[in-house]
Amino acid sequence: MQRSARTVTRDRLVFDFPEHGGLAFPTPASGSQVVTIRFHARSTARTGLHWHESHTEYVRVVRGVAQVTLGRDSFPVRASDGMLTIPRGVWHEYGRAVEAEGEGELVLEEWTEPEDGLKWRFFRNVLGVIADSGVMESPGAARGLWTLWQLLVVFSVHDNYPVLVKQGGFLSRWLTYSVLWLAHWSGWVVGLKGSYEEYVSEDASGSEH
Image 1 (tube, helix red, strand yellow):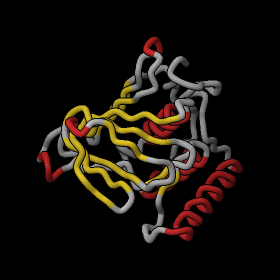
Image 2 (cartoon, rainbow, N blue to C red):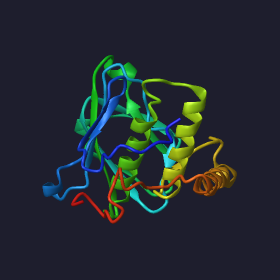
Image 3 (tube, rainbow, N blue to C red):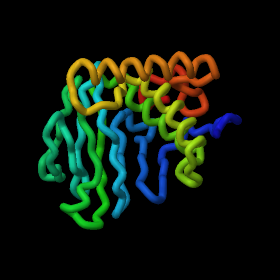
């Protein structure tokens, strides 16, 4: 379990996980908050079903085919389909469309409205936690649970609500709220945070930091 000093990655622009994919941030000079996400060929990784309550999300496929779940519908999305809008509160998930494109790589862009830097900070903290945990290189039950706890704390302050029960309705959302609340406050007791200065500047409001 990762309890030692965290790696300083706040100025790092590219993160790569060889078995799954990676993420690239725009350069500070660009003024952009669009992140580029890559799923390696043969990767079966997905974002996990989740929703946002204060941000509308936009996704655009650059290369390959994405399999997108939006509400109760699941469908392929290609570059020719243009920008996909994911409204606030709508459950969604995406990953590489394995059956549609065989072993092809998926590259897409993602950003949110409002452009307040929250998504940018979310990605930096999630990637920092995962990289420092070592869970990709050395999986294990204890390491996995510790990493999940840290990620739930990050989720709790970055408008990212994972779907824990897929039946839908208020009960499902209430369960997510409860789990995130418990993770957040129990994490605070042991020193876990929603954002770390090693991963992103505490005053960051966008890609200029």
